[in-house]
Amino acid sequence: MDLAAFNGDPSWTLPMPARYVVSPDGTVEYADISPDYTRRGDPSELYPVLSSLTAH
Image (cartoon, rainbow, N blue to C red; front, side):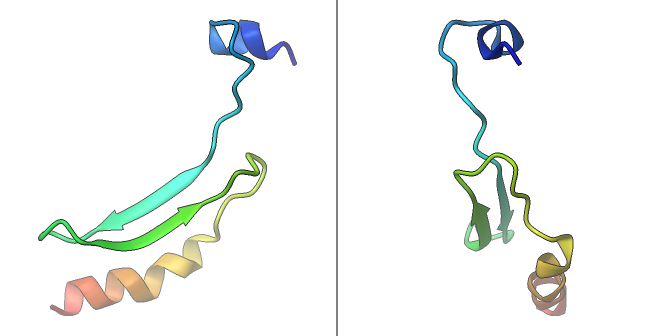
């Protein structure tokens, strides 16, 4: 893959996937960040966090 063409600039930058859950008061309740762009967190990791937020 030609990253420069894909990104639309000459940076050859790869994305860093990240997922956050932020509570209504602005607290980060969950963060999943990976420097490996091929790794994505499993959605099941979010269930306990979301359940906890909806219980409050």
